[in-house]
Length: 70
Image (cartoon, rainbow, N blue to C red; front, side):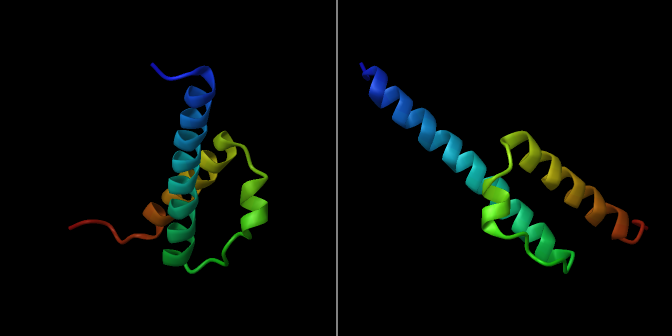
């Protein structure tokens, strides 16, 4: 059975993985949209909700620039 400390470490790792995936998604979307990359420090200062919102905004922008499917 993990200790409280070990559980907190694992929780931090999981949150870090989730944030890393979001940051990668944001960077990829910015690259595809040919937007300048948001500096890492700027992204690091955003909350998880703000990162998710930015990713959603970029995804919506990408979808709005696609030609309609035939």
